[in-house]
Amino acid sequence: MPFKSTLPAMLAIFLCAACAPPQLADRSAPMQGPTAPKRYPPPPEERATPIPARVIDLAGNCKRTEEDGFREEAMVRVSHNAVETLTWKLWVSRRGSCHFDLDEFKQVQQTPHIELHAIDGSGCKLMVWQDPRRITLAHARCEKHCTPGIYEQAWPVLFDPKSGSCAEIR
Image (cartoon, rainbow, N blue to C red; front, side, top):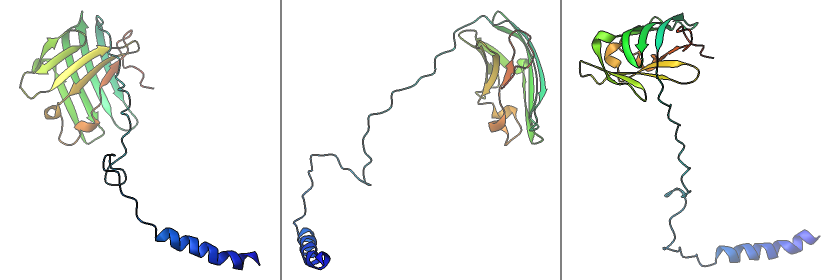
């Protein structure tokens, strides 16, 4: 029975290892373990490529109701990056709506994207830009233009640049 003869030797090795003097930490090395995370090189910064400036001419009229109850009605007229008409209302199911009208905004930028600021000083801004597939009308910091509690679900409206109707989302 070789097992019985090796058991005392293994027990002696285990006890000697348990009695070994502790290793002193190298204080010049950075801490590792649960108190300090491992330091990995930061990931390379990935930046979205900017959308190139384009001359936007749009006679947009988008009326759409989605399966989830989201609904939008937007009419926008843009000529050589100057907004001439803008009326936009969107509904988030039956929970509330947002409304934007050109009379409440002032255009402050034409390129590389169109930007309009609310004249009430609220910080709300509307932006229009074009990529190869669509023209986007979006908003930022416009909670005051919406029913309380729905702003996070208020999405931009997308226009087909050729027809001016609602762009395909999928």
